[in-house]
Image (cartoon, rainbow over the protein chains, first blue to last red):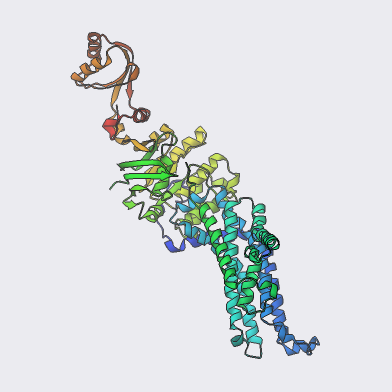
Length: 291
Length: 314
């Protein structure tokens, strides 16, 4: 049907595979997320710390550079330790939180605020595929600023180290991968849940940060008033630090050893599950009228 | 095979029965869905699309069961919802392309089809504007564009003329007719405007309080083209009607002395006057009329049984 003819003709061309169609949601959402300059700037800023980390690893393993910088006497090899990766994991995770808080609200809210969901779900697309398409946007972006650059640092150190570093520190690589994915899952689902319930972007951005920070403060109050440590279960940053230090085999300060690690894992999985539950409650083609 | 088959379909929402044991087969190329507010029109559409699960019974679209083959139904469906449904920050063309790609059209063809659909619905000039800036009429047309861009075989239009001025309404009706006549496509048009349905559909399903009040084949009805006399009378209307029936007429009596009569070729008006005089019935008013969809609808609402053209006429 040519535009000048202005008559309706059915489409008779090829169709894409059913199982790939949910990726269309990811592609369009990703393009929408990065249509804002702020998103691009934030994304680039997130890659600065790994760049600094790469520079540090290079210096620590390069005698010529150290000589030029008069650092031969310093114990620079100790810089690139397990603790080094935990620090970078924490930095990247905080940056990932801010990036999510900016990008997350723009993923689902626009579809819901003008009731576009029935149009998505009237196509051969399930609610699970719709959610998966949206999760993949955040998972992709957050991977690019967490485990991907950190594993790059890990392999860079393995490559540059003059001692057999990889074999002795393989758990750092797996820890970075597992710990990052746990953080990505919690962040992505929480941000999408917020995006599905709050339609104003600025409010949703604040809410994404608040739902991780406010319970932490509340947990602190519980700890102080009740003289207990169960309040840490509401402190997501604390729980993540606990998990990362365990995965990367770093000694924790004594006051941070009050919760078993499995409990931290359970709390994080429960947080992700709660976010997923709230999200699926909203992703419906029609609101069910009660009564 | 019927285009839509309803097999004891029941849908409950929030514990309330919204569709109550619907049974029937719809064979029309353009099926109208009529009924007062809350009769279950939109729920039926949502159920056919798989948005609401059937609590009892089932329905089939082109033979695909809504319980088992919901994806197969959606794969051939185009849907224009009643309420606003768009992504306000997207340009019209990008939105329609997005929807076409989700329906399975490859990216390049989807872009081409989106352009074509926009020109087809008359929005070619504004296709690069954000949908949020469109007027209500433009949004209706954009909804139609996204529903037809992928060339569906089953097009569902829920109140397509909602909020349109007379000119835009006429344009919408013309577009719907064009789509209907263009090829291998079945339309399901839900509307509370009888005229819209009358102008676009060849079969009507009338719902009342979640039940089928009538199914009428409008195409047959138009073909039969039967005229009747509509009268307002005073007197023994039932006696008068039975006398007319003895002469071979079809009669239907209503409240307030209203009566409709279809007379065979051999009976003339003067014969009817004679019967009225004999039965002491005064004829206060008399019109030659043809059954309109409004009559059919009102009959259905009054609870008169109606499952075919012949039953639907009186």
